[in-house]
Image (cartoon, rainbow, N blue to C red):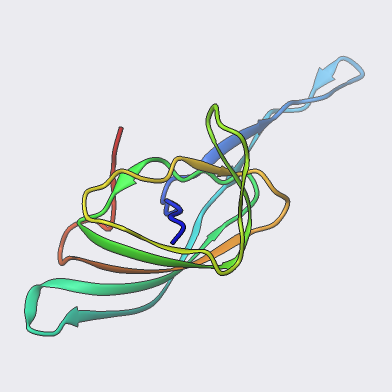
Length: 139
């Protein structure tokens, strides 16, 4: 099984430089490549009032970065539409459709940036502690 640590919640901001015309400069604008999360379902874990199951479609557009983080439970994922990602200082890697994996509770993962020209779509299912954030930053 191939493991891809690819969940995220923070966005990477890229700045487009201004161009001067006739001595005046255009203002800089910030383009944010946000990770889109669509919750598809949520339910309690049978017989366990302390945990819940959350299903999400997670979309990583070109330029989006998922910071390293951990979950208060397990995450399983399936890549619906793949693409190329890159971790800082590493070579780009293909993440093809059909790739799948499991991220165990408390194990830091992610830190990838989408470096292709298409959106990567991932179906993620979390079994996590109820009432806690879905993810927490990790070094």
